[in-house]
Amino acid sequence: MLPFSRVSIIGLGLIGSSVARAVKAAMPSVRVTGYDAEAHVRERVRDLGFCDDVADTPGTAVIDADLVVLCVPVGAMGSVGEAIRDDLPAEAIVSDVGSSKQSVAEALAAALPGATIIPAHPVAGTENSGPDAGFATLFQGRWCILTPPADAPEAAVEALQTFWQRLGADVEIMDARHHDLVLAVTSHLPHLIAYTIVGTADDLEEVTQSEVIKYSAGGFRDFTRIAASDPVMWRDVFLNNKDAVLEMLQRFSEDLTALQRAIRYSKGDELEALFSRTRAIRRSIVEQGQDDDAPDFGRKH
Amino acid sequence: MLPFSRVSIIGLGLIGSSVARAVKAAMPSVRVTGYDAEAHVRERVRDLGFCDDVADTPGTAVIDADLVVLCVPVGAMGSVGEAIRDDLPAEAIVSDVGSSKQSVAEALAAALPGATIIPAHPVAGTENSGPDAGFATLFQGRWCILTPPADAPEAAVEALQTFWQRLGADVEIMDARHHDLVLAVTSHLPHLIAYTIVGTADDLEEVTQSEVIKYSAGGFRDFTRIAASDPVMWRDVFLNNKDAVLEMLQRFSEDLTALQRAIRYSKGDELEALFSRTRAIRRSIVEQGQDDDAPDFGRKH
Image (cartoon, rainbow over all chains, first blue to last red; front, side):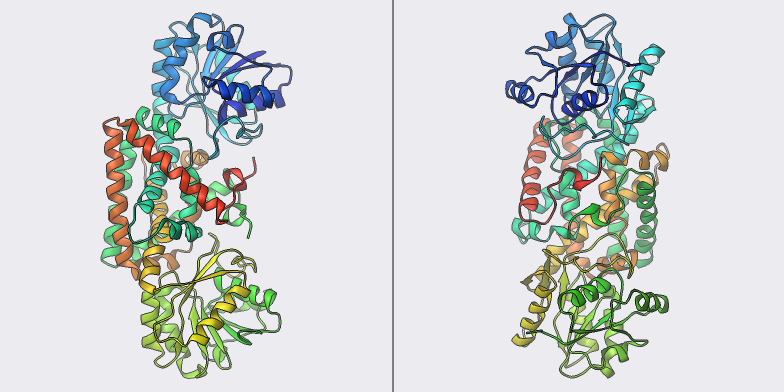
C-alpha cells in the first residue's frame, strides 16, 4: 500500500531533489511534482528528469497533491505556506524537512490555518547544494524525526511515517521542543563551531591561507566539510532555533574555558581524562551505523 | 641512491608502524629495526612482520642505525633520547614525527648533546592507534615538515628530505616556531574543539547519550573522529605547544562570541557573510588534494 500517490516537493536543492529521486526509486508509480523559486533550478530539474512534472508556480505544484513536502530554508516556510494556501487540497498533508521544528510548526500553522501539518526532519545531508547534489540513497539508514502537533490525525502521522520508511529512513516521533534541543547539540552547534574555526584560520596574520590549506590534513579539513554547507539554510537554522543554540553554545564555551585553564596550568591528568572519555562515544556512533569504521572516513591514501 | 640503509624506529604505534611499513614498501633493502616500550606491542610487531628486527631495549635498537626516528608522544622525547644516548652511533641522524617542534628540538638537544638532530612532522594520521592501525600509504600525498636547527648539516637535511619523499610525502622546511603556530590552527585547535564538544554533548541532562549518537549524522559525527585520537599523544601536544594553542584558542573564543552575539540579536547578514566565506576554503582544500571531493567524505549511503 502506497502512503501517498501524488507528492509535491517545493524547493529542489540537495534535500528536495533527493526526496524526489528517492520517491521515484522506491515508489515509481507515485507522481512527483516539483517547484523551485529559481527559474534556472526548475530548468535544470526538467533536464535531470527526476520529477514527473515541474510546475512554474507553487500553487500549480500542489493543486492535486496528497502530500506536500516543503524543502526550503526554515526562514522561508511561512511565505511558502502562504504561496500554496489558496491551491492546497483540503485533504493534503503538509510536511517539511527543516532542521528546526518549533519555528516551522508555528510558521506553517499561521500560514495554513485548518491544514493537516506534520513537520519532519530527515537527519541526513552532505556539504553540497543544488539539484545536482541530491541522490536517491541519501536517507538510507538515517533517522527521520517527525514532530506532529498534539492534535494531528493518527492516520496522517502513520502515512508520513510509512513514506519515510519507504525512502529508507528509520522514523522517530518526538516533541518539537525536544527535537530542537537534541539537534542543537548534534547538528547546529557543530556547524556553528566549524564555521567559526574556519573563519578564525582565515583571519590569521602570521599563518597564510595557503599554509592552512596545505596542512589541513592534521584535523582542520574535518571542520571544513560542514563549514561548506549552504549559507542561507544555516543562517535560518540559527535564527530559528536561537534559544537552544545559545544554551548549547554557553555550555560549550564553559567547557572550552575549563580546558583552556587545564592547558595553561599544565593539568595533564584532566586533559587525558577528557580525551579518553570521548573515544567511547566515537565507538558507539560507528557501532550504531551512523558513521563508517573505515579509518579516516575511508579517505584514499 | 638510498638515503639511509639501517633505520631504527622507536615507538611502534599508528605512525611508527606506518613508517616501518612504508620503508619496507618503498626501499625493501633498507634494514628496519623497531622498538616499543610495551612488551605486548613488540610481540605483536614480531607477528605482523613489518620490521626486520624487533629489539628488546632502546639501546640495542639504535646500535648500528644511520637514521633513528622517534615515534613517541612529544612528552616522552627527552627520556627516549636519554635511553638511546649511550648506544647511538656518532654519525646517526636522529629525527622524530612529533606534532610540536620547538619542545622536541629542545628536549632532544638536551638529551643528546653533539648528535645530529633534525626534527620532522609528517602531517598525516587517522583516529586509530597501535601497530595494527598503521599502513604503508599513510604518507602518500601528505606534507612532511622538517624543522632543522640553524646549524644542521645540509647533507643530513637533504638525506631526511629524500627519505620522506621516498615514503610518498611532499617535504617542506620551516622554522620550528612557525611550525608550531601553523599546526596550532590546522591541527591542535581542531582537536581541542572536537574533544570539547564531544564532552559537552556527553554531559547534557536533557538530551541522552543515545540521542546524541542516533542523530550524529547532522554534523556531530565529523567531530567524533578526531576526538577518538590517542589521548596521551594529544595531552602531550597541548602541554608542549601551550603558547601557540592558547593564542589560537583566544582568537577562536572571540570569534565565537561575536557569532553568538549575531545570533542573539538576529543579525542574519553577518551570519550569512561568514558562512559564505568559509565555503571557498573547503574548495581549495579539495583542489589541492588534501581531502576527497566525494560527498560526505565518500561515506556510504
